[in-house]
Image 1 (cartoon, rainbow, N blue to C red):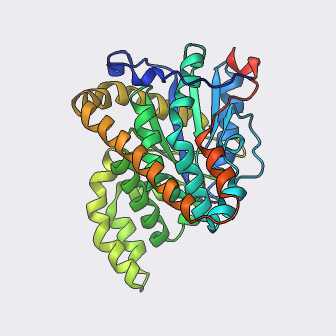
Image 2 (image 1 turned 45 degrees about the vertical axis):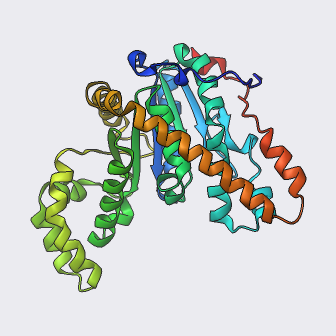
Length: 334
């Protein structure tokens, strides 16, 4: 097992944007609890490795108990979620957010690890917490997205539970969430309608392609939310036009070929469109990233001042935090 050192990550060199490689492609897996996100991660790992692709995995969910796929970097090896909950007096979601925020302040160490392996890799798959707002709307999510995007081609995969979208109101809620994630991250985006082995996603494609059809479906709903969704369905049409979406099954593997194709297009979009944007926003992005890290560290200091039990030990542990890499599966690296 490799031990981290204090050497800065390769992404913090003078101008890393000039040499962003076309691979490995980073895939941030985002999805609501129960959408099948982690199961889809497992399916992708198995499929890509069967194609002799070199895959690296990172788990950012500190509260998950078991994962079916092999993990190379695991937040659970660095941050003890239950201890964070205990010492800060937090609930489950607050502890997940605090754990992720703490991990994000040391994310340069993860970039250093990835920098050592990058030439051997084709894909870096990153699993995020099922509490979707924890990753998307916290400072830690922004730190991680920005750090990866200035180093490797980075894409977002939003996993949607197709069976839950049978009701048009739920479908619109998911699409509004997808829209907000896209504009928050500004990264190339792919929607994976999961569980098509349970129910085909054809009706969702129709709703996305013809706002009148989703409007008809919403007209049969009488709630205030349905009225709001109807008023927004036309505005969402422009969003759908530029959106990549595929139907997949994490259980059977159906649709994975289409997903890989969409992922390749998203990675090319990163090179063609996102890198020029980064070049223009380079200074501003780095300043925001540094400010976010400093704010997180100040927040931890304030919280630790209020912690009563085990404060000194916890503070020492957090200051000396080191992210380590698990034993590598050499077969997965080719």
